[in-house]
Image (cartoon, rainbow, N blue to C red; front, top):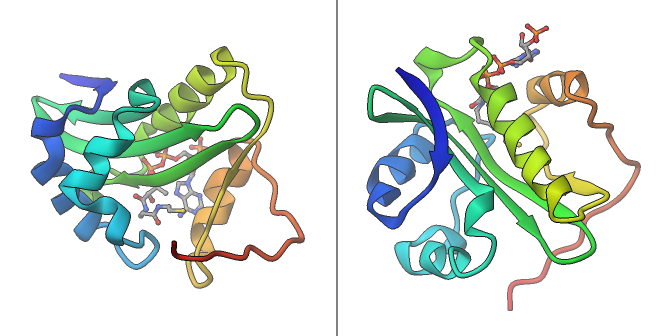
Length: 138
Ligand SMILES: CC(C)(COP(=O)(O)OP(=O)(O)OC[C@H]1O[C@@H](n2cnc3c(N)ncnc32)[C@H](O)[C@@H]1OP(=O)(O)O)[C@@H](O)C(=O)NCCC(=O)NCCS
């Protein structure tokens, strides 16, 4: 039986393994340790969703809302379960939840070389922006 639910810390190992197997499009970094994910759960825990099939985690998405913009991170569906609408369901639900919080506009980052996924997002109404993202590790 397939369902979406909110992530909880006991899911961490399964979710981390899914991210590790998700391919180069999903970058795992210092924000993905158990401690950092625990920090994330102190804010918007209802925007970190997992998809489950018979109690096995097969998909994730992390949303964030800072009061002005939304951000989407770590959308991933286990390879064997792709092309069955699970990625779209995760995105629809996280978008719906962000909207319900008052979020008017959201961003997500696609790594160069992961261009295939842009068509997936386009179908969900996302548009590429002509912009350069700058980042700084603090
Ligand atoms: C991106 C990803 C989550 C999509 O998940 P999915 O469950 O296969 O997607 P869905 O089945 O919900 O697809 C929804 C629609 O997008 C289309 N689609 C999915 N992947 C696509 C792709 N790579 N290229 C073009 N279209 C695609 C589907 O055909 C479907 O179209 P339809 O509604 O007309 O039938 C999955 O490919 C993945 O985990 N990729 C690796 C991790 C990654 O790179 N994440 C993105 C980080 S920015």
